[in-house]
Amino acid sequence: MNVIIDSVVRLRQWLLLCLLLACGGSVFAQDTYEQLVRQGVTAMEDDSLQVAEVLLRQALKEQPAAQGNAIIWGYLASIAERTGREHEALEHYNIALGMAPRAVGLLLSRASLYMKLGNEERALVDYNDVLDLHPDHPEALLMRAYVRQRQRLLKDARKDLEHLLRLNPVHEQALLGLALVDDDDRRPQEAMEVINRAIDLYPDHAAGYALRAGMELDRRQYEHAEADYSKAIALEPENVTYRLARARLYTLMKRKKQAREDVREAARLGASAEEVAGAAGIRPK
Image (cartoon, rainbow, N blue to C red; front, side):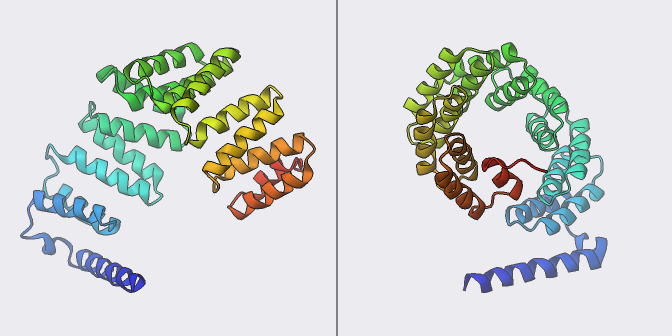
């Protein structure tokens, strides 16, 4: 029954799209700018992205100089991103921010897209702009710390994470991030203290155990690492990353049978051939 209902809904969406495209501007003759925007947003909420795009572009044609067009360009950017057109989405975000350069939501969305595209430098500029406007913004603090850590700006990354933890002392991602920064900065004791605190606060969350296992693996504390990877897998049995990590650990421990079992399970869960080979200790030719 659900399949039939879904098919009917998709057929209606397709027919509406055909009507919009075939009739051009005449179908909008009695629609106002505000109505077109509302209809476009509703279509987005219904996941009718092609219909939404047609409606929103028509709204832009109706009033090309309207103050609200920055929001429309933001919607169009979101649609383009959701449909795999990342570079087009970036162009739309640029237009939107040209109209509303202080719009925090647009800055964060463009920064996230830059991160997806691997352009961390440009993302960092947007996160800086958000924090210039709102110094306590949690997402911008967390993401700027992440970028700074990757750039080995560990002192700056620590400042952002400690700032975030002053705002929210139990912020899980900030605690995990600070543990990583401390570990990278050769502060092993501080790193373990922070990660243990995170696990104490969130004993049912797998990420803390997996992160601690990685640190234990680096310290060659293999038995502790095995226990933590196993706990993480028990909490998230479908997580491919944890399976591959434990397989690599078992390979180091010369426990080939258990490594093969984790590798097979990771493959079943969707791990790539390259990931499977790496976990099994096979060097690429």
